[in-house]
Amino acid sequence: MACHMVLDFKMQRVNKMDIHIEMRSLLKRCIEEDGGLANDVTTSSIIPQGSYGRFALRVREEGVLAGLDLLLDVVDEFGEVSIEAIRHDGEHVHNETVGVVEGNIRSILGAERTVL
Image 1 (cartoon, one colour):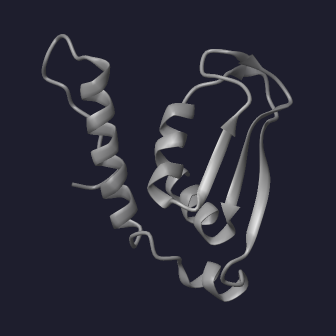
Image 2: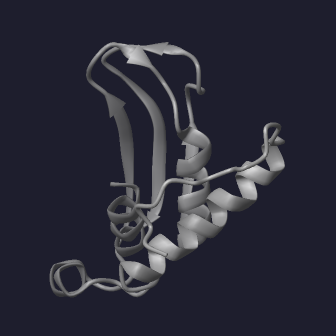
């Protein structure tokens, strides 16, 4: 199954836990399709092993924040990375920091690749 597939729930009522389990499964397939948790060649060639960083997650345009739960799951899969949510799903945001990512830069770039 390719990671770009849409989740298909054939039941009329689906609880939040079922969706979370399916999303985690899809996330793991996406990571594996992208080469697993190992860093890509470009990242490995330009980012020294053990490099550590802290980055702001910024929203430039006005909108309603959505998808932080999935972002937290992605970060969790990569380890050596933590995320602090400053704002939460459903909140109106505009030109502001909504979270902070901190950890191993190679892992952060791997998580970013998966999210994008």
